[in-house]
Image 1 (cartoon, rainbow, N blue to C red):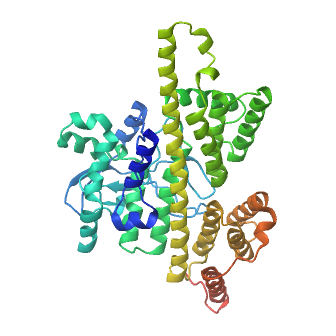
Image 2 (tube, one colour):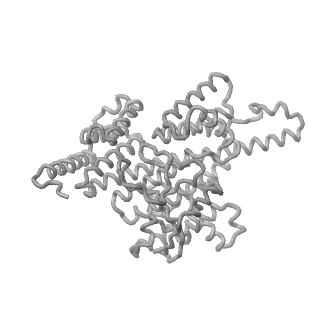
Image 3 (tube, helix red, strand yellow):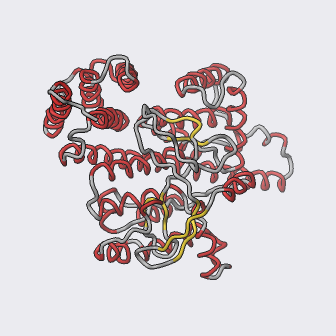
Length: 468
């Protein structure tokens, strides 16, 4: 009954991508928990200068840290990073950033007004917005947004005044990145923003959900055992080691566990598979990650840590002791279900956000936003191929990477990245990627890409071409 209620509440709060834009539904997951920032992280935030802003939708005054985390240029750019930028320890193949250990949780440079829920990039937040955009925020975002903030506080909200709740969420890091990025994505879609802006916003939203799947669990039981598995593998690998190395190590750990036991999964098995799903998601194998998490979720719900599997049960002889242990087992199972449910829903939402990003990149090509910009066109060719690969549209992703290699400079960083993705496609799909796939809109986009690059070649070879 509890799981049915949870699912109903989730469906009420979280809609599919298109209805969420129309109705302003907020991406909140029941029971989702967020860790309090560490003191070291708070000290680092306090060192960053603040910017005073006024919300253009409701006039509320905000003071936010001047931190820039937005992907401004392709990774091969030589442009120096802004002084106040949260540096990533590493990035996934679609540039999803992850924080340095012990630092403040990585956040997109999106500001959300804690009064009305209006969301914009830091450096554009105070710019005037059209009257119809303000009306959309007031009508579709604000009512649910206020309810969402109270839900995030849980039982504490009943003991807090409205002023105390506002003060708590005036700190931008108190608003989860998953919520801030999705609010911004919905706003850009509702106001028909340019394709590239919508593509970046959808990617940031996908990254935020992916970081939840890869995050350290909150529940004490799963947190303890995933930490133990990570520490064991960490004796040979560093946190910044390639994702493929961690995948191999976790698969090896799982094989050893399975070969040593002939009974149902134990805690180390559950923890290893949970970690494995996070790394698979980071690599872009969303279907495999979801399948593993679904299996673990079913085991946690139906079989895992029942009395007959509990190693402490035979040592608990008194009736009172057994009742106490049953309560402990039930609490552990509830925590597991909640942790895994959140991760499953985040993977499903990531698929929707990647689909929105792929469509937005297509729109950008058709809008002419990349005309006359060959480097940017090649970069977004790579990004659309990578997004399609992560969505599971393998033949079409293969076609985009092939077009990139046919036009990029041999030996360039972006050509090397495309080559690596083609290798992954070959491992993942084999002969399936050889199917004819560049149909419909994508055939038009390939023609436009060729035209963009050909125009640049003609201009460079003409008399006086490329005069500075």
